[in-house]
Length: 220
Image 1 (cartoon, rainbow, N blue to C red):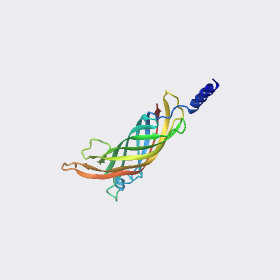
Image 2: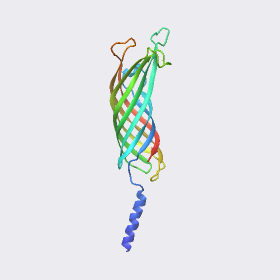
Image 3: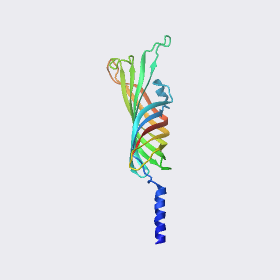
Image 4: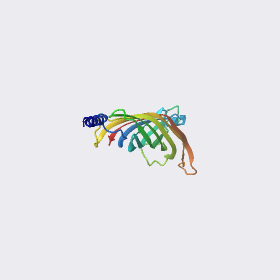
């Protein structure tokens, strides 16, 4: 009887020390992001090393330490174009409205009950719209030129989930941060001139470089 009792106590102690089993979480988060603009052709729209985005992601646990995540981000960037360099008169504005849709696996390692580093590899579609307009106030300006385009792309990143309060079968709130690199193929943007006729390419560029997303949300 004594060896049996000792074995039971040892098993119970091990279970208590181990805590909850390591497993991926379902999640729903709001995010801020940044994506590199290494393509110099994007300088015609905005001279910046990166563009900022806002969006969110959802995650669905598949197996222990493995989930699939899907995210959507959007942003608008632009600049004024001064054609007359002598008087510095602004003749028109150029803008880009971008959308990013990414999907891929996320594999984590539960270091502690509240800290889980992970690696993710996501692919998706980047689609957007280039606008040339002499009147940015009115959306129905007849001289507005709009061109749509899309391209495939993806990211590879390292990150971590930080969930300070974690209890079984209860909703928890936490944050995550991931950084890595992204690459998007060049996309062509063609539009019909205001006077009509065949479409003309007005822009062509891709994206690439440093990638980052930070979010806060619910884990369940």
